[in-house]
Length: 276
Image 1: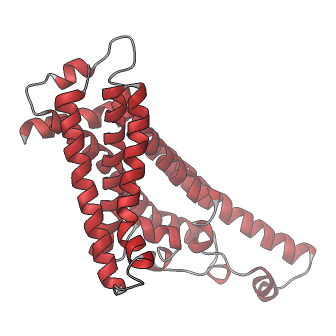
Image 2 (image 1 turned 60 degrees about the vertical axis):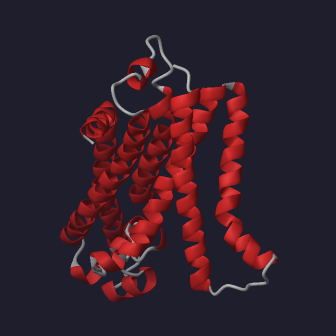
Image 3 (image 1 turned 45 degrees about the vertical axis):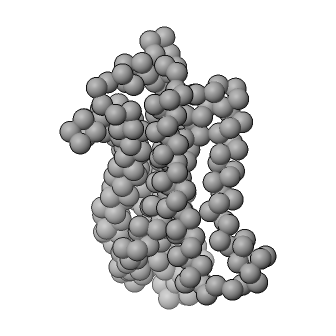
């Protein structure tokens, strides 16, 4: 366990600078965004009341009030989230390939460390998961700050105030912030399982090179079909035999099997097939 934690710390520190940049970009653009959005709304209100001679009530009835729900659907808010997500998605691949690529490959030293090679695999997966949770936590802290900035800048008669829970009812935010512990396990467990499947596909490529690309794609396809198998069998073979909750548990079970298989196959490839 101690060596595994050291590997997690090592992997975390390798990406830390870029990770802090992602956090800084998120904080900067979202705070600037809420200020810009507020000023633009107030500017529109001022022009409408001065140039078009609208009263406050007429402006509000025509254009509506501003709220955080409006802001979280703008590119100012969603852009940094999409950038962070895309960066972490790329890093799922880069976390492995940087150990092989470059003038001084690091893979040999990493894989001959006096610890089980599976710990290297699990440490990389854990690092990705911690990065995701960290960004989610930063966003959770930012939401009330941005809401307060909006309240400071926009007079009460021009805005609608919502609680953080109400703001999180936006569809895509419900995926980031599940309402229940079971939903959290389901959403983030699925994501972590997906990371492990991609890791194993990468190890196929590293083990068998050109042939490994085909094997990795084939493995991902088979895993995807296996995850869908309860739905496909119920729909086309059994004629909708299972109740929705039973089907849900079957899909979850298939996901757990696929996750365990990804780790087992990855461990096998690391120990028996991988070349450094």
